[in-house]
Amino acid sequence: MSQLTINDVLSYACAGIPNSERLIDTILAKGAAALRAVRKRIAYARGAIRELPEEILFRREKAAEGGDAEEAQDATNEADALQQKLDELRRVHDAVSSAGCLAEGVFSYSEARFGLEPADKVLPMVASLIDLVDVTQEYA
Image 1 (cartoon, rainbow, N blue to C red):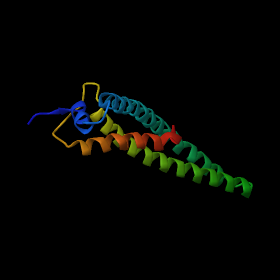
Image 2 (image 1 turned 180 degrees about the vertical axis):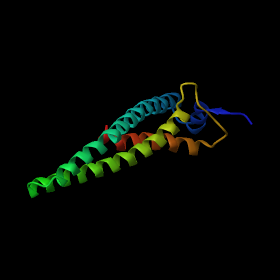
Image 3 (image 1 turned 45 degrees about the vertical axis):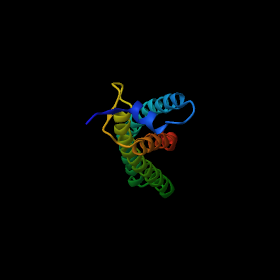
Image 4 (image 1 turned 90 degrees about the horizontal axis):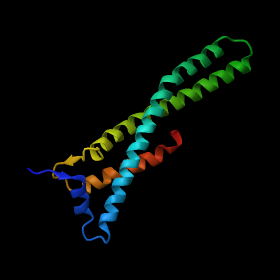
């Protein structure tokens, strides 16, 4: 069974479209940019996931110390908000890491190779990756 390159798959998918070579170049460039953005988001999420638990613990300890009830409630609220952010970052990290694995497969610098998958499976993967990067902009 022969192997198709990503360029072969995109060429097949874009056959008959005027300026299809330019379209393919654009898709590949967006994919490479998406891969770089995914790597940044993975690094950011990993850093935040490492740092936030300490901050949450600090806030919870501050709340447990007692003292002023209003200060304790504020510290508890801050800890809860940070915990929500941490949970969301973990979800984003997991999703983006999965997309990063996909991107590594699709946009490998050594020119990714696919089996004879129909182009209608490959192009949505590229689009999903780019969409995921757009969705996670706020976490960068």
